[in-house]
Image 1 (cartoon, rainbow, N blue to C red):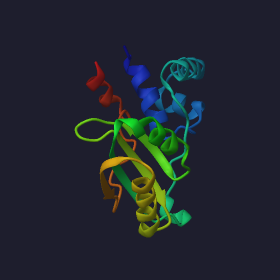
Image 2 (spheres, rainbow, N blue to C red):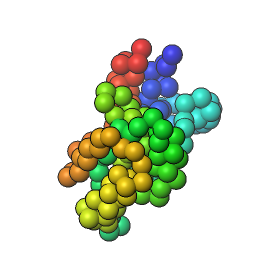
Image 3 (spheres, rainbow, N blue to C red):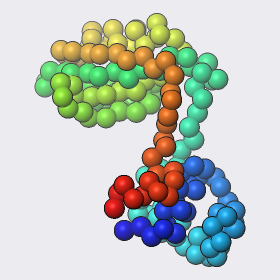
Image 4 (cartoon, helix red, strand yellow):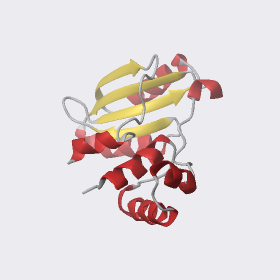
Amino acid sequence: MFSKKDAQIISHLRNNARKKITHISKELKIPVTTVYDKVRSHEKRFVKKHATLLDFPKLGLHAKANIAIKVERNSKEELQNFLMKHPNVNSLSKINFGSDFLAEVVFKSIADVENFVEGLERNYSISQIQIFSIIEELKKEEFLTKPEHFELIG
C-alpha cells in the first residue's frame, strides 16, 4: 500500500505537519514536485484534519481526564449530543467493555471536572462512570512518525 518513499514523507509530516516540502525533499533526496504530489494525494486519501497539539497547562488548563460513561439506552443519544457540543470535551469515542463513551476532557481544575461529572449524573441516566485523571502524558500522537512503523500496517 505504501512505498518506502511514501512512508518517509508521511512520517516527516506526522512529526511536524508544518515542515516545508522543500526541506522534506532535501532530507529525503526526492524531487520537490514528487514530494508535493505525494503529500496532496495522501491528504485527500488519509488526512482527517490538521491540528495543533497544545500544552494545556501552559494555557491554565491543569485538569485533564478520561471519563468512561455507561448510560441507559434511553439517554444515550441525548448524552452523545451533549458531549459532542461541550467545549471542554477534547475527544469523544464510542467504546465497549462495560461503557458506552470515553470522553477526554480538559478543565482549569479537578473541581471543574468533578462539577462536570456531577452535572452528567444529575441530567442523564448514567449507570456507571469512571474518571481517570491524567497526571502526565508520556506519549501522544506517535504512531506512524517513523518509516519503520509502516511495516506494522502491511
